[in-house]
Image (cartoon, rainbow, N blue to C red; front, side):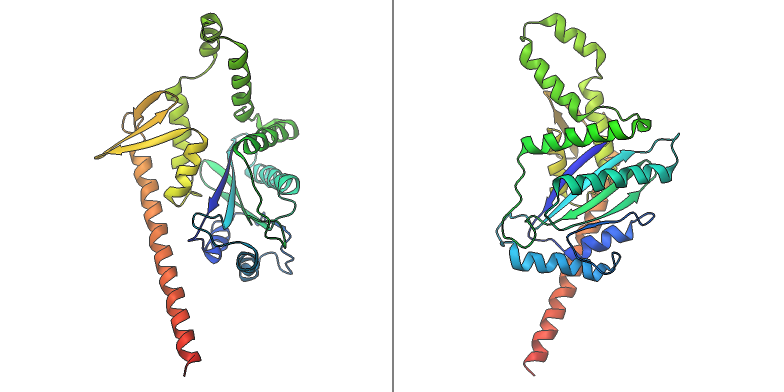
Length: 291
């Protein structure tokens, strides 16, 4: 399971983000917290609550956060019915909001594609009815990921969920208790693990295929979490990770990257169209007021 906590800034379009949840929804697995909705599927009412919160409580700063976009991604398991997997991920998302996002505005929906199930949760960057910002340090984020992973592994053992985040914690602890010169220990440890190149390819494959990412800013946030950097020189894109470098073509991921790039361009064009429509509506409204 991959957990991503993304942020959106100045260009956030709340109406579009809410519509995105509904456009790709599968099965009506919604969750809502602190929105006080009469109809939990009323897109206009949901967007209005986020817009009102943004106008009243969220300071407009350069590079400021106006919306959090939390994503839980689960690789589909063939031996478990899809409906059951959807129920599991929905329960995990509900546990997340009940445990960590108790006092913020939140709305979530489930998306399904051929290889993965995603749960998306839109959350306000501030506490309900307050200008106080919800702050999460990288260390706190890592703790949340580890606790969520343990929760899913313990409650839903049928998933046979592999350890990802807690393994990282264990490796850091082990590295601190063994000297760099302890070659026997590190050699033994390496024989149990996939190579760095394998890890890099696995992560990038999943990230590039993640339809929930729609901007390069979001992509950069996710790659930073995995300590991966993409560097482009001419037509060549190279991935840097944990002391190694590998071209996307060598990893056989260039086409995956191109498809993702096209998805970003499509989103950017749609945002420009929405901005244009909004500006025209504002201009028309202003002209009517002065006539």
